[in-house]
Length: 522
Image (cartoon, rainbow, N blue to C red; front, top):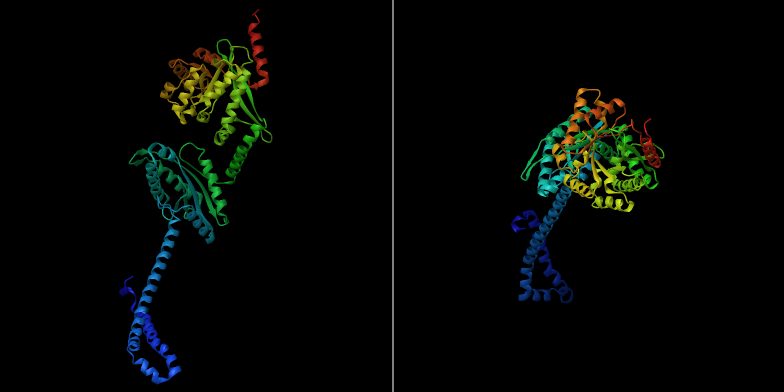
């Protein structure tokens, strides 16, 4: 700091103090002389050249020192102010996301704490938002594109959330919004829809156009809320539900949702225990030739008998197994068990095994299946791997490579539940298939409406175009059997032929069918 920048009053005070201190110094030095020799000696000493110089210069030196001290004090105050300002700025920066300028998790906690402390009749609504496809953008277009997407998303959230909304970025693709004005669910619902619409529009980035859907979990903030963690947990449970829906979606927390989510989480925990404890088992259902009723193969159907909840259906526990990753372990067990059972059946009866899309993510997926064939001695052509159309959403190149490798080894490939998923003609062209299985829902419709009949005929002709076998599921009546015979469909499956039965009954069932075929017609 320059001397001219120091306040005049401060310079005057420190200069005067220095002057007085300098003036007092000669007197202090003279005091011993007076005491010892009297005032005459003092006069002689004072009149000496050195003493005269000291008496004149010391007050001036004291004044200069006083001014210097004033300067040092001013510099010290300035540095302290800068440090305090820096600390304040650092504290403020620690509460904001540098990329988007939104508040961060700490800022959200502070805002919720202030909202709860206000103790109004309602604190509005809390939204937790999860951005879809962000990882895909990062992986395919780079982190710069991902950052640009986040900035653009933050801006659209500002516009869609409305005046008074407080926005926060909690993590990579996680956001939160506090809506103080949304005191009732319909108002919050309107904002959720506005956010979904805003983020449904394509984002034009320097690296290209990208789409980014959104899932939203919402919970109303009541006057009784006093626990931030509990409030966030409610919104997180709602977000969990919203993410189960394909595409943009939102969900509100309520007691029924909380109960369902808790039960789902309990089932997730029970999966591993149940598998280890032997609660999972296989049943089999035959696939027969439409023309003569010969059993071509048996489909292995995975079952879970929970000790407290009874039989839990695959459409409930398979998604949970995929989510937790235990599907890899269970899937390997199913293949091993099915191959070991099939090798005991009369040839050429085969076995069909359903495979989840997540199993393809295991780099040893193909190796394990081929090892099972070697270990059990089952001929590859007697094993059929069934996949659903959901595998097209995983990594179609990875799936096609894996299935092509299996097929080249002699394993048969079937597309299960055809007509209910997201197949395209191009996917069927690329897919290495031996069999197309029409979903059971079409079997019911084909005799009820002309459109249903035409759809089944169309799918069968599509199968013939690709030179693959057609199987239809859900055949329960002779009328349905007669109809598919007229269409020329080769194989069928359903309660008309047999309900699923225990693994221990499979061999007896097959031998009994062979005996029936061997009995000559009278």
